[in-house]
Image (cartoon, rainbow, N blue to C red):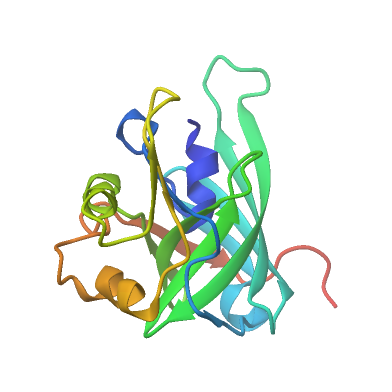
Length: 192
């Protein structure tokens, strides 16, 4: 899996061990979030590359994120550009960024926190989520047929959503490996 694909979900630049993915059949978060151009639009810099974020529908919480990242030193050209449609939703005081991965109809998701010109994203911990699916505490399936593990969550009840956010079953997010983006320019593209 390329870094650029994983970056989009929380605007996250993380590659998980053995390409483990946590997905959902519906976007994570129960409520739509209003996103403003003032808060989200701009060029954001992270360890893995540059992200241009543009608000496309404020009321629906929709963004376009364009990732420019280095493919490899020997590649021609050495950089790649990927564009993604992102939906931001809320559960409690958590924001989730959701996007489709390649041809999948399922949603990749991450918890995101926007603090001024800093955007922090945390991926779900595949091992922890997988354990809760196996125990029947979260609805979903585990697919290990493709060489890596895909955990696909079915729609959550409010209680199951709270279980993910509360920490009552342990740390379900990769808190020790956040992706941090810093905004280096407020607007992208042609001025209005």
